[in-house]
Length: 168
Image: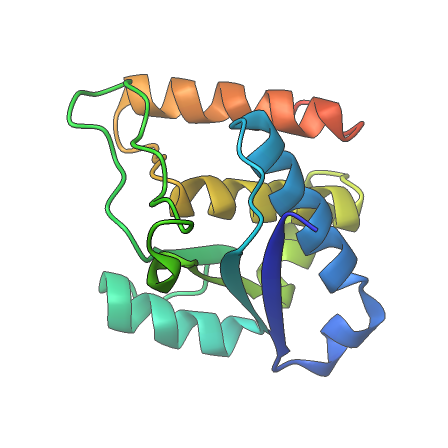
């Protein structure tokens, strides 16, 4: 297992989804693509609904609306120059207290609607969103064109390694 993933399910509809397996698959593929083992790192995933994610989005981003996924990195790893590589996560061998990479929240409602609208397999779309969020935990973002191009290219590569078509 690449990382320790703690899944908290708040919405019972998630009980019909192999969420832990998909988290392990997506997050493991992200670590592999970054050349990291992931061993010893921790990620928390909250599986919720649109109402809960809208509350979180309002509280942390000032946007009182539902979204598909949110992430809260434990470390500021973003590059100083647009389009550059993020810094690697802290070495947990030298400082085990730095094992927590961050938190992810994912909404069943929005993910389901997006998959349906895009004619995507729900599990494939969810895997994409989990990989996307894990990349955020590792310092990637899409605020600028250069950063978006880097992140989307990496997402496409990660998803291809899992047999999932290019979402872009």
